[in-house]
Amino acid sequence: MVYQCGWIGTPEIILILAAVLLLFGGKKIPELAKGLGKGIREFKDATEKSDLATDIKDITSEINDLKKDVDKINPKKALNIKNPLKSKKK
Image (cartoon, rainbow, N blue to C red):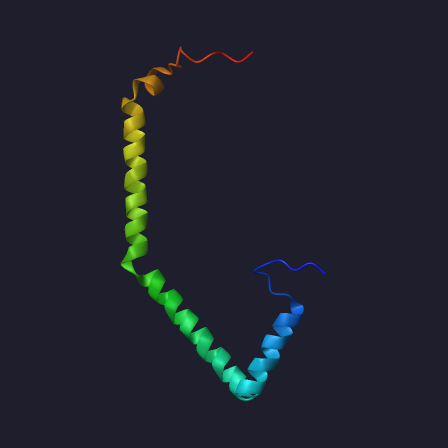
C-alpha cells in the first residue's frame, strides 16, 4: 500500500469520527454542528456586507478603464503595427 503525504483516507476519517463521538457524546454533536453552522453563516454575512468587497470591485473597474485608455493611446495598438524585428513564422 502506497501512502501519499497530506492525504487523509477513509480509515483515518472513521478514527477521527469515533474519537469525536467518544469525547463529546451523541447528544452534544448536533449542538456543536449547529453552532459551527451558525458561526460560518455569520462570518459569510459579515464578509458579504463589508465595504472591502465593493472597494475591490471599484478598484478593478478603475484598473480596467485605465487599461482601455492606455490601449487607445498606445500607437502600436491604434495603428495595429507589429514589431518589425521579430521574425515571421512560416
